[in-house]
Amino acid sequence: MGFEVVDYDLLGERLPCSISCRGTTKKTEASLAAKTARMGLELVDRYLLGEPVSKPDVVAALLAERSDDPAAAPFYRAFEAVGARAADEAFIALRLVLAGKPPEDDAVRRLRGLTAVARAGRAGDGAGLAAALKRDGKILSDLPAGPFEKPAERDRLVAAATAAYRAELT
Image 1 (cartoon, rainbow, N blue to C red):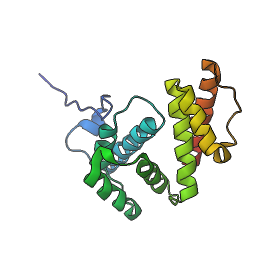
Image 2: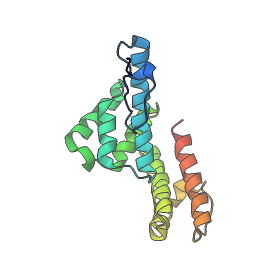
Image 3: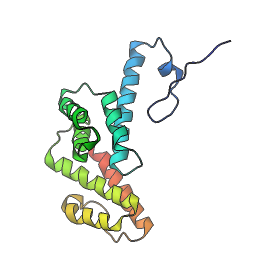
């Protein structure tokens, strides 16, 4: 009677045997590490864009599989020290570093604005959306113009902010 070793990733999805079975090759281990690191970044993106992901889960995922990039090391130390109390801008700056971009103030501010718009729009928070657009309007001028009173209008804005966020990181 045979049995199968089954492992699950951080999102609860079943890993294929080539990843979960014992006796993996170095190439498979490297692939698993890269996949796990991408999953951590995916959780960061989902959290920042207002999807239902807890901040402690994001920190845990980032710390579980770290990038070898020396520029990321200070961020990991900070996340170890303060955990979920870390400012969202620290997640944004780390995302820039891991995308191979410098975490310059203008880039962090733009991504912060895009994520604020996406979060408020997803939550149906009209006041939060108006505040984010007022605060960051100059750096978000490429997003669609309002009004954003109807859900379809907010959805269009959220989609544009999400696409712009992802484009900034590629």
